Image (cartoon, rainbow, N blue to C red; front, side, top):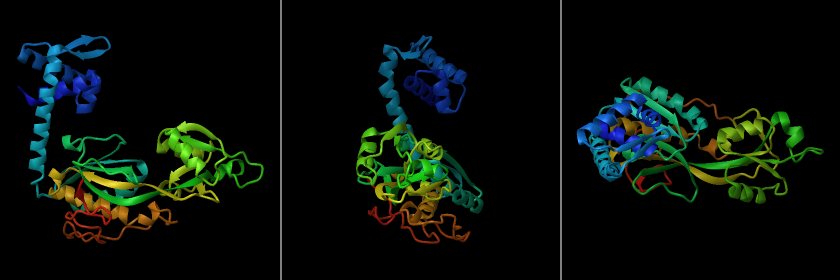
Length: 334
C-alpha cells in the first residue's frame, strides 16, 4: 500500500471534496481522485460513495479511517524524529503567524536571516487556525493566548511578550465619534465575541456607549475604525503605529493576552528551526514596549547580528533552548 494514496484518502475523508482535499495537499483535484481510485483498486473495496454534493465514506472507508490515522501519526513521528537530528542550517522553515501586523515585524528579520544563511527557505503564512504541529502542518507557530491560558501540553511553548489593548478613534472621524467632543455621536464597533465585548465595554471609561455591528477579525476591526464605524478596542501594537488612529483620552490600557512561540519538542534540536525560533523571539521581545503600549516609535532599525553569531547567542539575550521557565523567554514543554 502506497503511503501517498493513504494521505489522499485521509484528506478526502476529512474534507469530503476532491477540490478541497487537493487544495489541502497542494495537488490537483484529479490527482486526489486518481490516488483514491488506485487505493480502492488495490484493496478491492469501495471506500467512498460518490454523490453530486461530495464524497461520503462507505462502511469499509469508516473502518479504514482510524487505522489510516494511526499510520499518519507514525509517519509524522518518524519524520519529526529524523528532522530533529538535522544539524544543517539549510532547508525549509514553515512558520504560521497570527496576524499581518506580527508578520510586518518579522518578515524583515526573517529575510535578513535567509540572507545570512542562503540554504534556508522561509515559508510564512498568516492563519488563526490551530494548525497541527504534530503533523508538520507548520514547524513554528506564533499565537496569541488569553493571559491566563497555556498552550497544549504536548507542545514546546515560550511566552514572548504581553499583549495590551487600548481604545482608539479614527483621526478623520474624531469630531463624529470621539466621546470627549461635544456634539459627537460616539459608539463602539463590536467584535466577534459578544460576551467579551459586553465585559470590555462595561469595564471601560465609556460604559454607556452603544455597540454597533460585529467585526470578526482584527483586520476587519481596523477597517471599521478607519471607516468611522465606531471606537475600536485594539492591541497597542496594531493601534499605536497607525497614523490614521489615535488613542481616546481615556484609552483603558489592559493586559488581555500574551504572544507565544510554539513548536513540537521532537524538533527542539533541529538547527534551522532553533535559529528561526531565536530570531523570532529576539525580534518580538526587542519590541516589548510596543506590545505594552509604551513605544510611540516602532520603526527603530534592528541591531545588526554578526554573520557568524552562533545559534542561541542573539545580539540581545532572550533565553536559551533549555530550562523550564516561561516568563523569561525560555522554551518549556507544556
